[in-house]
Length: 194
Image (cartoon, rainbow, N blue to C red; front, side, top):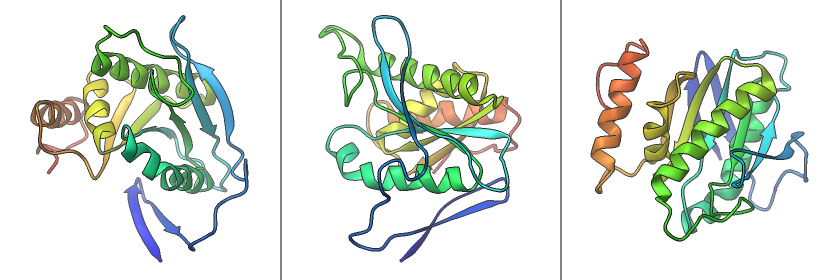
């Protein structure tokens, strides 16, 4: 089965999946790391670009949350590995209070903390790889968080939605914010994502 996941700046990515196959550990050269604000380290995996052609941007993958993140883990890793093979630096990470990242305080505003985590991840990707531009690839709730974070991070030049949540208390304002952000950044898009 071949799935076209995204088309970005002339790069078309095709992901082939054979049931039962999975890349060997560190097959794509992923490097584990901790980054982020003091007292709240975030765990991430950097997939450095290693294709013949190098993109002049990097991608931060903004995961869904909870059970959806568990179900998407293999697919997200495969997307990151394939993008790296196409010459794109990719950083995937665990939000505060999830995975191998530091826990959140019980009274903490999770949405604000996760938005800050995405901004920190974009900064870390730029610091580690030298790219000046970042695109955020968000899956489900991760897209809404990415849209909120993009407004605070001037290095973000694009958003990629994968099955975004389109209903709920923060969905409509986040979609509007994403559209305004892309127009403001001069991407040429004038409509809100559908």
